[in-house]
Image (tube, rainbow, N blue to C red; front, side, top):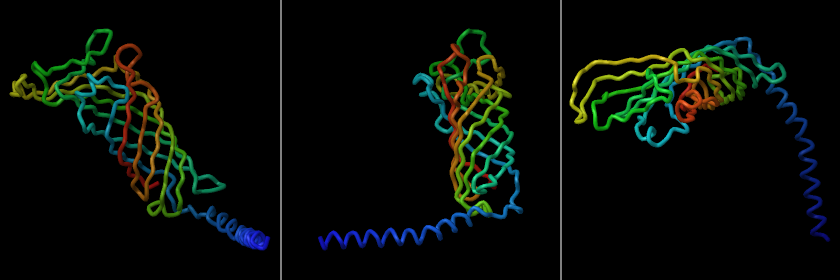
Length: 247
């Protein structure tokens, strides 16, 4: 029993200590929510450098895709902090997102007239040394944000989740430097074809980013398919990269 009483006394002491610290903790939490944001800009530019991937692509195409599919995005965003707690905010913007997918000894016949989009292997025939498929979208992004120190965005941990909706501005392929099957140059010219015929021109994507200061890592996954139903595999584009922003 003495042992039990000792445990009870320790438990009571811990409870009392917690009760005494709760008011101080509550006061500190309240103080943290009162930030002077009068000098913080409400709008800003987000610039992103990304690597692109296609999710759901068949192996016959995947094995012909490049390892580093570069792209860039840029958005102008308007940030609105919550009145109750300015560490949280919502942002709405407008911008352009691009994507480049490179292929090795394969062409994508987006200007074709067939029902299905043709991905043609060119291993044993004439081919382009460099060939890529590029798309560009006009997008409206919406983000829900958290910033640990909203007064000093450049010295703060931050993260955001959101969604963006867009419409396709352009889709084109570009082939450079025609070579024969042995890799010898036949003609150093460039061929470009542009059409949206096979593409789903509306895109909705889920987004997320986390970082510190002006730099963060971001991801964007398309919830809609890249191509129209029935013309190609059900492919969902994915972007992962670095984001540069003041907020």
